[in-house]
Image (cartoon, rainbow, N blue to C red; front, side, top):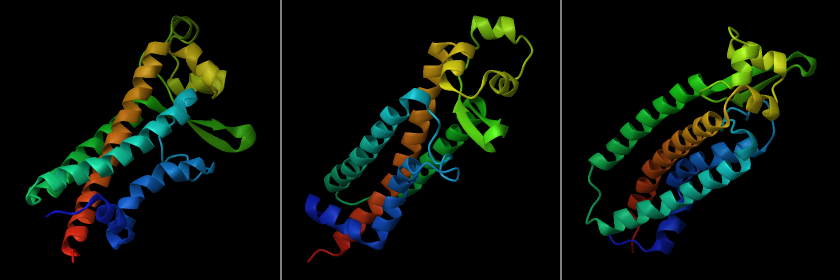
Length: 194
């Protein structure tokens, strides 16, 4: 199937494009600051904007990579969508495991609000000496759900490791979902040649 780049991207106006656009919508909806959308993108602290931009760039690169891969192949093997969906499922499991380990939702009763925060893997010396047997939730409730306090309670290295892994797992998983839809868009574009 020999589909031009223009025809491929023009085919994003189809029903397949609606499905392909869903992964783009999830992080974009997070820009709208609402309690309902704060769970659509992992909380990444000070680096949220940087990581968001990288996610969006990765997704754009995914659409192009699928185009180049599909164009290079004589035909798309029927296992490709299945393998992408399998990889997406594994990725979603990784995102959930990292979310359980690295994300805490802290109540702010004065504002009647819950704030999702990402924490590190290792507590700082300050946290170990000041809060020896406290849970993560209790420490964050005591110190406050703000970035400066998180940096006091966990080591910077472990915070960045946790946030990078959260970002990578989320972004790659979202890109795999997008890749499945892009294969469908490519096939749609190829079926409508002529």
